[in-house]
Image (cartoon, rainbow, N blue to C red; front, side, top):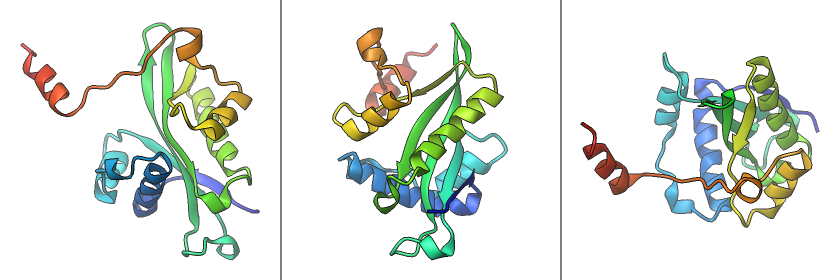
Length: 171
């Protein structure tokens, strides 16, 4: 199947929002998505973008049964390691179910790895749900390391009331 990988454009944000919602269903967290395409436009295509995104697009003869030509995306952003320097965090990698197994996910991830290389980043980092064996197997097959097992790192989060309470402690 023919497809291309390209940088997302502001007009892709409705498709990206759609696929974020599809991903949330796959990850068994459908009620968690609180972002809209308008926020995606603001945060990714303003003067100081918070994220970068690539999309996978198929030609007209391969569009989805729902009429979508944008069938996958990878959303990432730059981070910094005090030990290693520049890094990239891959927040989402998603391919619509009917288009999986055709090399699109691999192409999206390899394209982010290429960005890492071009930007002289030391690491490409990501998180995967512990039950998501297909994704874990895919990442491990490409050489990913599970830092929970090898180094004992835990991924932590502050949000909602915990984040607000912590902010109130600032001088």
